[in-house]
Length: 306
Image 1 (cartoon, one colour):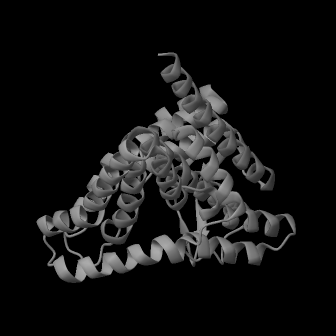
Image 2 (cartoon, helix red, strand yellow; image 1 turned 60 degrees about the vertical axis):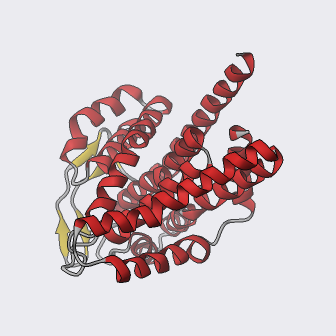
């Protein structure tokens, strides 16, 4: 049932993309603001309470409801699993950004590509060169594919609908609370950041392994081992170094964002990133999806054989 739900959810999302800002990010944003208003006094322990109410409790209740339905009416449980997966996993939650940037670059519309990239990443990209736009787009796509596809898929396969919801909510509140440095948040968001790091620890490494398996394995592992720790965020460094090595492309490197040049370490080996590597990124991600589906199929077959 897990394999079928994943395939149907991916297919459904291609034909009927979810308006995630309306149905997911908007409600979660309002919940984050309400809980912060009620609980935030800058203390760590109150951040723990808010995180439990926002993430752990809803995921646990959903999982309990799913297990009860699975016992009482498996067909309704399967429909519930499909709906939850549709809301928590999907390419179309990020792929339109990547596609629009690719089309703009192929048409020679650099200013348009800069604007699209800036809106996607939430950072001004008006000074970025064409090479900068390509590198940043590839990096953002690799990170987004993990966040919106591979990690939710892992947690869904491991723990069912509650696992997928746990990951999606944990990722959202880690950014909403844990990603802020303003004095008003204090230590309130610290637990959300730590909890998400723990939840994402294994999925990050499995996604990076998937990139390596479907790409240049030797270079991907080498870049992972030697370059990931130099990135500002270790989890992102693992994903980007493995993906860059798997594709044989150089990512990272200094980029022009706004009036300043951001100095970043080099990731990957081989060629300078160009427009052709945007299609290579799509190929890498889809091959990794197919690998994941094959693994789920093997688990399903072994379960039937057992």
